[in-house]
Length: 378
Image 1 (cartoon, one colour):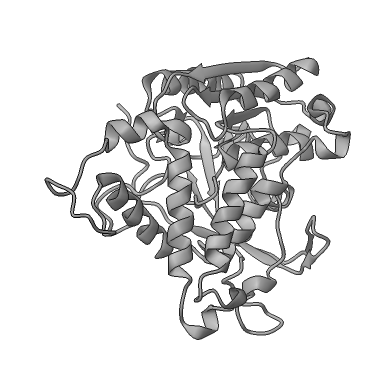
Image 2: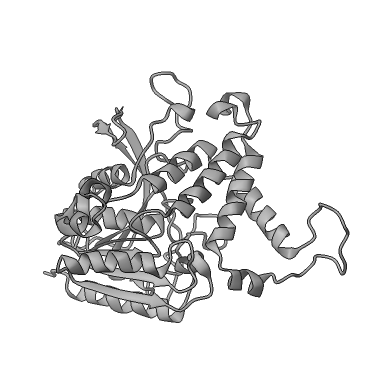
């Protein structure tokens, strides 16, 4: 029977060696916060790296001491007896560079000034995240991952791992992702950024010193994001046109269930996420495009890959539609790589990769069983 990994404790890695970022700025040193679940085998061959999406963290599974319930963002996927079975695999979750959950980012103190980096923290890319994650792999003495996996922006990182370090992973699991953002998706990100940067409490990104946060902008950005993460069917099924009261009030106050939900999600997000981190994370999404350096030819870009792939999409995901996953599949097949593809029937929209779905979980369980059985064992 599937269980939780139980109580977990975050760990911190200090990386003293400089990292030259894609934007051309060298980061003199940095910290990464991470968690691990399960046991690394004697051959150090059973490690799986889980990459998080835009607002995710290193806290993938389990709970913290004193918290009565699980709070890991992918706890339904990771744990004993679950698709990512911690009885079989040593699982790593890491907070990306530039994050706001412990890894070095805009809210961290700049050693040169003693003040938060704020808007002066350099722009980071998916490639930068992968190279920083490789530092963690080196620290843990993991020469080759059994798999690197993630959903959405996490799936893009898994894809990038197969290109930056083709010999350091056996499998790449790319879920609800795309080879680059469409113009519409870049547009959504820009509207969200404008909501933040035009908030009177943003102060050009220097809001820390004033003891405020651009709460209104963050709330609007998250509300917009949630609309794009859900499908129309999912929103109608969950909220319909239900009113909080029995009749309209003819006011601009919250009247519909969906309005209440979006405002709640926006408020909750604004209380935990750093605005400057949101800005650079969405830019990293916008910049991701492995084919750019190859004249727009994705097949040429993926020629470096050596891993086997599982690519998963969801029928109602209109943010990263199945057609975008099929672009990845075609480019991989053009290079003669081993690819498994699953298009899962779901009404949950983009958020489906976080939800428990029998068909989705069966695919993941079956594929990861194959991954485990093919590992080198003593």
